[in-house]
Amino acid sequence: MISCTLRRGAVDTQWQALALPPTFLLPLRARISTTPSFIESTPPQNPFLPTQHASKPPQSPHAIQKPQSSIPQSATRNNSPTSPPEQQPTPPSPAAPLPLSPSVRELLPLLRMQPSHFITAHIHARPYLLTAGDTLRLPFHMPKVQAGDVLRLNRASSIGSRDYTMRGAPYLDERLFECRATVVGVEAEPMRFLEKTKRRNRKVKTVKSKHRFTVLKVKELRVRSVEELEGVDMGGRFEEGVAEPGLAGA
Image 1 (cartoon, helix red, strand yellow):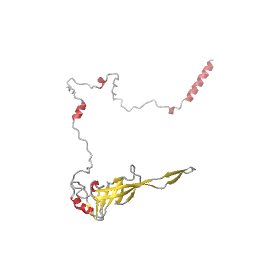
Image 2 (cartoon, rainbow, N blue to C red):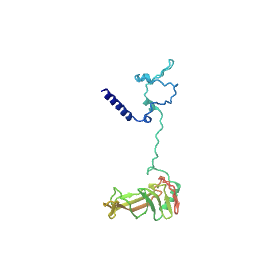
Image 3 (cartoon, one colour):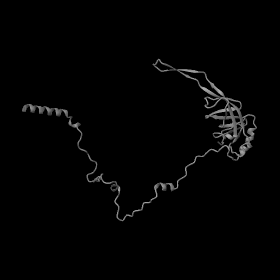
Image 4 (spheres, rainbow, N blue to C red):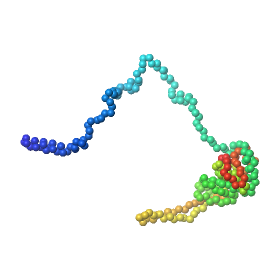
């Protein structure tokens, strides 16, 4: 019995020695401390002390205590002078009475006396060179319009004739001119068929598309006179002949 017990114990110790990793793979038990030994660390505060005693610093017996004011902090904030908010400049209204500039007063009748006029109107940020009687086919379908509706084109970058041209920076004032167009109808292109496929795929997908376009016709293009614009500043500049980009209001 004793020999069997000793033999079992020797086998167990051999298995334990084989199960342990080599010594160079064992973790280091010693920890290297970078703090010098002569520096004393501050004792930790007692977490069970009340908050007012732990956070309140010690006061000297000669310290003077200031009485707390009963005025709430919100009231002091409201009474403190604050800077007014920045206001964004608003565009002038069409009925704002302003004097005409000398150049507009002098050259506007000359432009008005010309036999025909042209205008560079902008519709959805796209320029179109138009004159009275032109038919314009827009490259898109304008929503919420029907055939017979009259639209006023109030955004233009230039208006002129054969001898005079007035340009805006970037647009002219809408009170300078009157341009009206009538919605003629809606045109549709023929149906398009496009076959789409992928490599190593026998499936073929057919895509159909049929775009619609709104058609306008310019019925009226007129330059207003000085009498109609009396008291309204247009801020425009006229140039004789072929004009370069100038300065204008709006």
